[in-house]
Image (cartoon, rainbow, N blue to C red; front, top):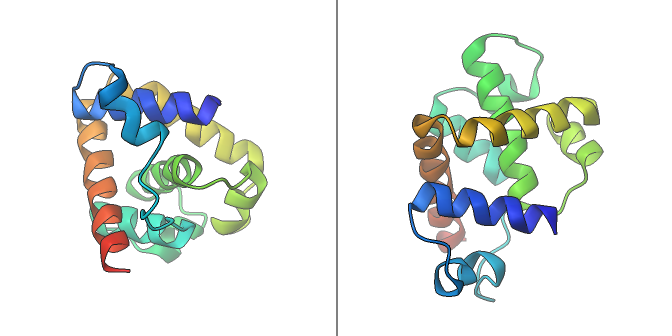
Length: 135
């Protein structure tokens, strides 16, 4: 339930639409022909959008561009998949579930303050839509 609310708020924030049943219906009840997004496709889309490597995102680098990409990747994997925090941590190179939780919370808080982050998320989601359509 919390995930659905977060997805809805992010969608409304990114799209700039008002919160009506018609506008949020695709988020709450996506079309059945939609291809499932995997953690690997999310990581690849984030890596391509932010010009970092997937290996860097799975690694332990603390460089700002890498850690920001990793945090965004964790947030989007959580949004797009049903994986638990520990599973997301495993996908990102064995990170602890608390690291995943911190990353998701940090991105969620930045969504309201950072329009550039909203644009980046839209770019990643657009890449995911394109890759899903070609799958």
